[in-house]
Image 1: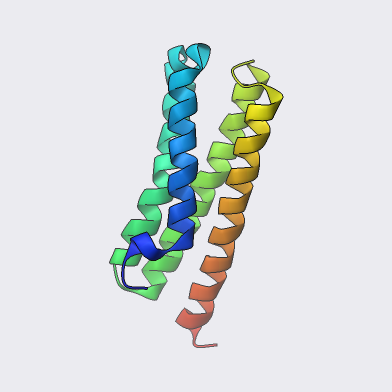
Image 2: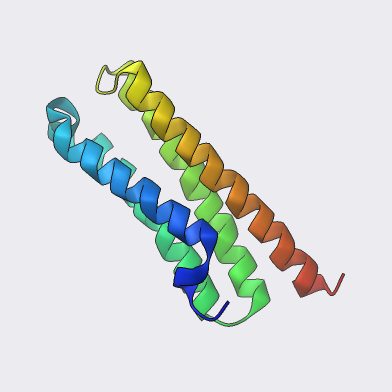
Length: 123
């Protein structure tokens, strides 16, 4: 990979972030809950940004660390989705689509992180 844009985890995180943005604009009640909406958007953005930043640093140890942060942001977003569901901002279908996408991103990040760890450790 030569560019962070080539990383599947970043591409999938970008798709998820776009979905969260659309949802935050379409759901009037969520749009008005500034705290939750902003936290959801920050977590989604953090997934993408940490993949990009870690990759661009050019060192496997730093990339691994930033992938860990990105994966944690993905978990944070999943948690916020539950809050949005419980508050009635999302219906079950909207929640499930986003939850599944977030789980997919988390699995891809976990696999990438393991791959980077193996390369970093020389195994």
